[in-house]
Length: 223
Image (cartoon, rainbow, N blue to C red; front, side):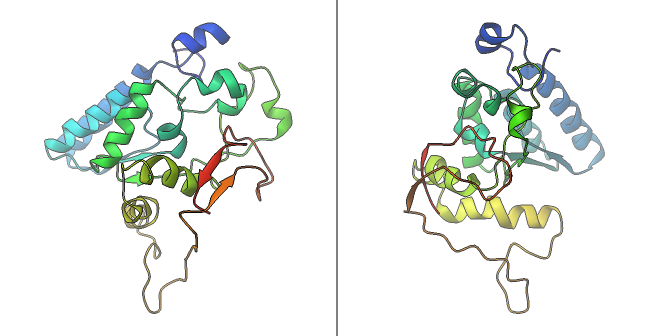
């Protein structure tokens, strides 16, 4: 199907001549969703990046399939155009896709077709990411910018309430994986993050040992 990490389209044609088509994702999502529908099994679609995949999940859910979908902050914040500017630092798997794909992911989050937001935290060394585009590994760090990207690109733009964002990042994942966390109660694990959703900051240094992020230098809200 081509090189993973970059969407097949005008950007891949310009930079390296090959990329990963969304049909590679769509066919797998369709297969697993139909199996969930036919067997009653629960299926979790992770890191959804294609708008057609969102449509497929929406359709099978309307038929009663037990499907949970998850998206990452980079897929609702960026498009394949970011690869032109950030090169290997915007190379990831699944790849960033088109504006239409990003729009459908945001709609899926708004409609609760996509219930979970995950960081997809994938650290890589500078040496790895400084390789040429086709040889560098896919993946970016996502932990330290995930909340701020949700606030900046979903909450402040009116797509989600702050409570709905928190639900998708904490409560829903905990329920899916049967974790004893994601809620505040007497005797529960004190898993608490204190933040100011209105604080504006520039992404610069990271606590992580890696810094492979396309969001360096961006102004974000929520810290």
